Image (cartoon, rainbow, N blue to C red; front, side, top):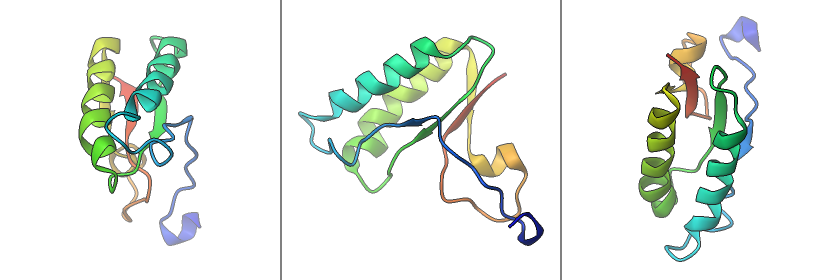
Length: 98
């Protein structure tokens, strides 16, 4: 895969947003994200899996997650920018320390 320009990337956290897509359900995903950020070391990083086709995930959950990234002093970036891959990976949303 590497010879083709791909990078194998695994996530640390699935937000399970696809299981809780409704406006009245997305808090379950927010709680999962909040717990993962609370457990992550200050100098660490976290790769969270979200699905942009789910409106509550692409808006509500993303805004919530990005605030946690800022609160942690981290910088949000895509897997594309973090791996330097020439091919766009399927999974984005890596948060790394500044």
